[in-house]
Length: 110
Length: 116
Image 1 (cartoon, rainbow over the protein chains, first blue to last red):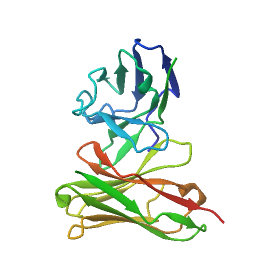
Image 2 (cartoon, chains in turn orange, brown):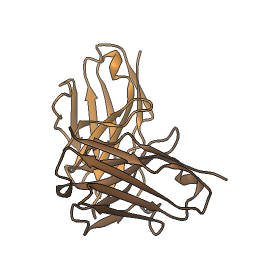
Image 3 (spheres, rainbow over the protein chains, first blue to last red):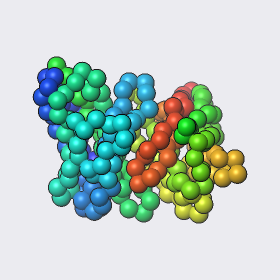
């Protein structure tokens, strides 16, 4: 049950696009279309941003999008805004009613 | 409004026990799988435990297996986490989260500190 691999940090200027990767194995990310992404501001509970790899909950801006190729999922944020600065976590179903998170990525908006 | 409210956190000595509770409201509780997720200070999210809507299926992360026990009372719209043989490394904010193939609702968290 090792954590999914995410970059520790990414950055971008307002208006730019950034992509956060999330690498797992064929037993989790690659095996199921059940990858989700969460945004977490300091001291707050995580907030669902993307589910089932590509779907956005109502209320989440369409600047946020998800994709997956093989054992790697990605979250892309386009048109970066200051309020996007946060920690982001990926999560995948890993079989046998277990879930696994990524180590988290700190997004800095320059 | 869908809401999850955790309680029961606090300071406990290594080797001690603590029972966390999560009260749910605003949805048909028995229809949903529930989980506990924790976050150590300054660290990332870690999935801890899962329980099905009926309570008949349960799973645990390897890090807590044999020490933690999850349960639920659908009549009281509550899920619990019994934590025994606590270790310093169990220190974290513990979140209750509703699972819908993804975690679509989270509580505010309750802090558990294991220290002598």
